[in-house]
Length: 330
Image (cartoon, rainbow, N blue to C red):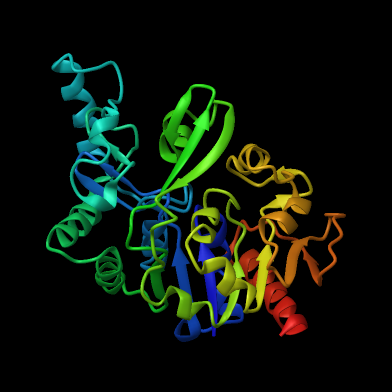
């Protein structure tokens, strides 16, 4: 049995090859929800959705988000009507006092739908309408995710990290902003001062999460700060990981990231923005999988392979390296 911690695009790419070592029946995935937002009244869970679309065979693999071939008529119409109504020259953001108005799960991550700052496809939007309707009927995020996983035919167990609100907030030289605003709307341009996982101290892991950590855990090559960090900030998670076998796959090639803002965010939380910094980010890791061209040395077992993943065959190669690392430390 194995549990993957997933966020962003790194771990989903690794999961493309999971079948090379692990059957779906023995695989659990815990997904980051710190990136979730409520946009125009709809609850969007980007890292969960990537896994839904991947498992359902409809993921846009050019972007690694959204549904392949999706249309964007609603998104375009929202921009058109905002312009025609002289509402804005761009996306709108709700005032601070509205960030805790409405459904509790959306606390600190609620955004206006006027001229959406995130591009959401029409079929993609149907998922968010369904999820939001389930939440409004009193279902938890876990229950809504389970229903959606069934709709997409997932064979693995997919769990959100928490049913409580946890928001990845980025403190920058231009003020505090949600991670999605920082990365999607602002293109990661503001200088990062620090990162906050608001709500995490009072949140609880979702049902089944801590039990899943009794199995071997694989941390994929996702952003250690905003993809994996929100999970680690939940009470009991770091302690649970310290008691089980953990293998971490590097999202770095030396001091270079494959994608995303991992370097800036690692530096902001006082972790070296490189493969070496993984020892600080994941002190409970029993083994690492890093690139065979990476000269980083750890005081723990380390498996080297080509960790670039452009195809399913590439992912299978990295998964076999993960299996080798697990065998070393189990």
